[in-house]
Length: 320
Image 1 (cartoon, one colour):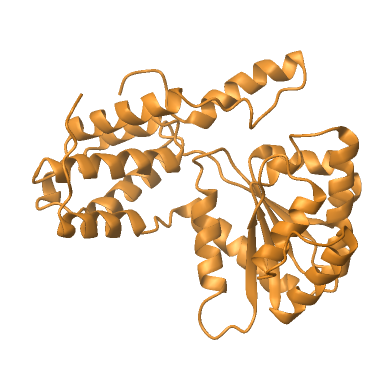
Image 2: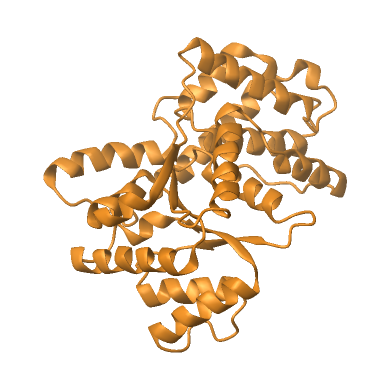
């Protein structure tokens, strides 16, 4: 087992700056634009409705949502976008409590469902909330009985009518199941966004990935970025294939490899650093059991579910 060293303050600052930058690739920019347009038009519409934003784990949804919220809630804007993370096995009252907590209610979990609903409407007006985002929305669709899921979907539909604000559902592709549970919600959906993995086997996919690696290399917190492995097309596209084209996993491997390079006082980033980082993260990924988060409901779906679970982990079994 390799002994872990400590970063200096300067190294920690450099690594944090490197990790904090946003990689604005094509899909990222398109998603930001569509959500922004939905938000801006929705605040002016009588019935703004719903938009769904889905993608596999590691596709980059969280980065898009964080960036959009940061832009929407900055500057001189007198309104705010409210983002709520939905926990597993979430009931209607749990969801109402989460909304109230995000609105700053000190007694978020107290009261009857009806009183909580009244407080949501009152506090949303008081805080000038212009849009609601429900992240990890699949947690409302993959647990509980059909009747319970229908009730949750019906409650959400009612809240849409009361609040008159655009709402974004974010999560895994199972988010779309809510519209099958309660088809009336589908009539209120104004659009769909899906983030797809990069495909390094295509000309366009490879080109965008290589531009991304070039961008990252420019900000590399190491003395000699000119000889960095990030400039090797062959090695970096191989890494992308190992991570199934999922930007979240690709950047995670790169961030860890840069940390390893800093700890070893290496002048640049090498293929060996990438290999060690990928090996570490693949081992951690293999230890995760994703079945509890994505329950399987039939024999046919079990086969599909196993494939999806492996994709969710993002790291292939093949060596880098």
